[in-house]
Image 1 (cartoon, helix red, strand yellow):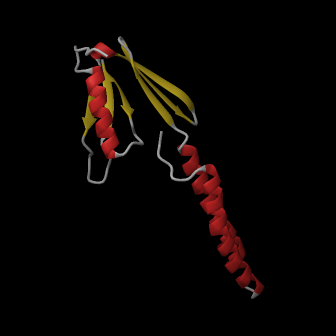
Image 2 (image 1 turned 90 degrees about the vertical axis):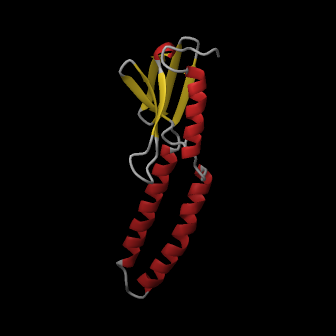
Image 3 (image 1 turned 180 degrees about the vertical axis):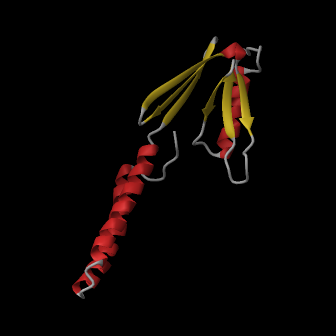
Amino acid sequence: MPHRSLTPKTARIFVALVAAPTFAVALMFTAQGFWPILPFAGLEIGLLAWAVHASMRSGQERETITVSQDSVIIRHWDRRGVQSSVFPRHWSRVTLHAPPAALHPSRLMLESRGHACEVGRFLTEDERRSLAVRLQQLVGNMNETPAL
């Protein structure tokens, strides 16, 4: 699951702590006759609340990888529901593709018989490399089935 530094409660506190001084300054200027500042302050806080909410919602994504004797099952939960991919373990291959450009993440793929599924999109680069090594140990190379 993705890393999030804020919990829902601390996200609300963060938005409130930014909104309080913003509206205080906007109300001060509104009292002096600069009334257009208040709607823009409301728009600014509304956009901040929307961005924090979107970030929190994307943090609810989940991904599990189950390696059994015969298959590798990848389940991905997001706001659209659950998507599952099943690969035969004996014919699967784990590949870590290098990033296409600097500052872009690498891509960890599980491939089998012309089908591919990216895993660990929200992991850090080190976590993705570690997962690639562990999956390679569990899945093995194509035509190879290591013991679990």
